[in-house]
Length: 297
Image (cartoon, rainbow, N blue to C red):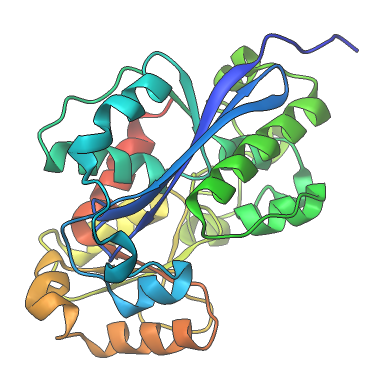
């Protein structure tokens, strides 16, 4: 077995105040070198936006927590020092989209860096989580790593340790993994039956997610469904106990700080309150995910 060495990367995670992925209220960064955590940084951020009770229930951060904390432009140089010209790891593309949108919100030039999705690495490392169960909490349980989920620094460190575990398991270095994630998860099973294809592209980055659309969308519903299936999501008509993603029209999210909501939206929040893990996205953020998936690596 060859020795894997000279591995340097940073891992990042963010928490948001509401369903707008630009509303970052916490950022955590963990720097790894040669298989060890060498530096960590975390800050609460004033998102200059409202806090939704659903997000507060997930991460425990509210308006009082960020009072007097820096706004994103005030920590841009710190972020640049950590991220510029690095390989940056995040678990699924949500954090990447949040960073990109938040920088655009303040007209800040994007950083020059290479992204690596640790969830895509996981799906190509362990066959039992290739198609489902590749969420950060479940994978950390699998590798025996204990952490406090939905704390940005804890999640960032967890993403880094997950990547290290996958590297050790596969005996592939970072350069090899940058190429591997562009290839099918399992070439022997890359051609799937029609029933599987209708539920979503099994090679898509979000395979295993079940998505529902609600509200007034800019694009046609059938087009949105095609996009969702293309990145791996099963598309359903209504919110159920199997729903993991709810995409809401941008106008519906912003009306009265989210107080006017559809029946699907309200049902999703009810299920979230009962412990179901459903992520609520604005349509524009969903389209960012689609765009990003289409331009990976």
